[in-house]
Length: 98
Image (tube, rainbow, N blue to C red; front, side, top):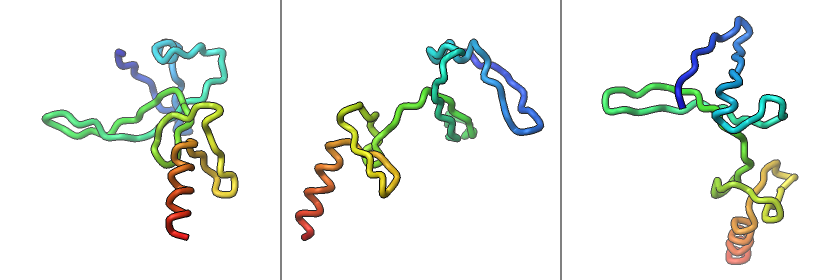
């Protein structure tokens, strides 16, 4: 993917060009969720902060794997989602400690 230069507005926002959305496989008319976060890119010579933009996929709060419908447990009282495998592991730990 080639780099695209954009300007930050006075309000601190950027517009993602359609070309970049196409490279992510996103139609500009769809209401896609995007994840944006800061990271560090390291090369042999430098360490540089970067902003990463990617299509959002819900992930397990424990193992960070992508969540698949039907295998997801939402712990609403705690405000996060975990996969069924991690829930089983937590329940086994709880039984061991009881």
